[in-house]
Amino acid sequence: MKKQIIILCSLSILSISLFISIFRLFQNDKIYYNTIGLVSQNYERTDDYKISKVSKPYLMIENDNFLHWDASIYNCIKENYYKAEDSCYGKVRAAFFPLFPFLWKITGASPIIISILNYLIFILALSLLIIYLLPKNIYLRATTFILLITFPTSVIYMIPYSESLFMLCMTISVLGLLKDKYLLYFIGALLLAMVRPATLFVILAIIASEIFFFLKKGDFKCLIKNIISKSLPFLVGYLIVIILQYLSSGSWTAFVDAQKYWTGGFQRIVNISDWSIEGFGMNTFSIFFIAIPAMGFLIYLGLRIKSKKQFMVKLIDKTNKKYLFLISLFYFAGILLFSILTSGGNFHSLFRFLICSPLFFTAVLILISKILSIDTKLLALVFTTLFLLLFTYMSLVDYGGDRLQFSFVGLFMLVITSGYILFRRFLSIKLDLIALSLIVFINTVWNTYMLNAFFSNGWIFT
Image 1 (tube, helix red, strand yellow):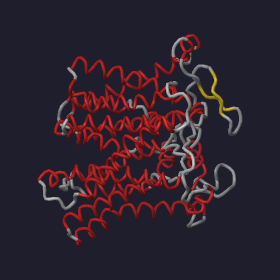
Image 2 (cartoon, rainbow, N blue to C red):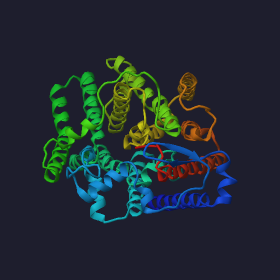
Image 3 (cartoon, helix red, strand yellow):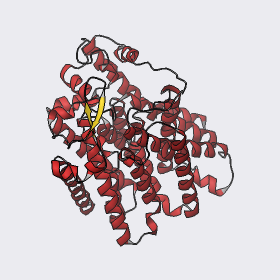
Image 4 (cartoon, rainbow, N blue to C red):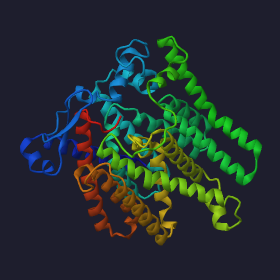
């Protein structure tokens, strides 16, 4: 165990060193214009709402550059709590839960330091998931770790956002479920509920999973007991949030009131759009390679829940890992359904709630641990079908323009990285390391591009 921890720590240091080195290289005019500048442009905000693409090197890594979008709101909560003054997002701050800004306040960290802490929290959480969910194979664990910490969306863990804390708290709950230790689950779930409102989809996914197994087993008392015990820490966490918001805002309904400043509600999809081409690409992958397969597999299981076939009995038997996988599927499907009903066709930031969620990593690691038992032809059929669906969708939707532009590299690399995860077992160790190195390098370049877009206050993610 100690040896594996050292290896994972070494890989994380290597990864962040590569990231910083590439980022600094692209700050140099000559290097930038002769490399990535040949195929891409950067963002520049010209007024409150207008963003232009310009050809210029990366910005400096400075504290002020980290305080954009949600980071600026978390910073306001850190400084002012939930006071209802009009300035500094006073009317909407209650829509953001307190655990991350309170952690930021306690540490007294600068925006750069809290971003480093976020990255370390992400690494810790992912390391724990890998140790407990993957087989005891050092090579598999190490290569999977370096692949996932450089995933094309991992930039989200390098800024002052709540994703890293979301990841750690959910990991604590996952370990509690894996080890059948309710206190550990309770602590993780309680803290999780204090991170962000989207955790509501986690408890709904847990309840849906319990109902699924009830339909299979028919034990009503067990259903009620499990729903109550699993929901209790979330309810306590939400109550603590309400109290904390009341203490500084004087309102028991601060969170509800904050929702009035977004249109919300059900909206018919009229046109597919996004806030950026980069986001559109990654959100499209999230829909077709994550959420739709999850929804499809849940429908398949639901239709065969009473099947007496041995294969189906094993497939839906309630083991801890299968329980976690089912929760992940319900979470993905729930997020997609909610987005379809409320987004009006603008799916901005969807990848944050799907790929940047701890349940995504949990599901991927469980899949990797079981992948040798899945028929190769079935994997190839599913992957090809999803790719064709994505390609068809992209050909029918006008948004985004030329599909071969650099802004779609995130989408391309997500597809390639997924294909690598599914079919790497057919590669020799030498070819596997070559493929892994290339994927890690390109993903890292993409993440530097995304971080610079965030620094430029571009419409990348909120």
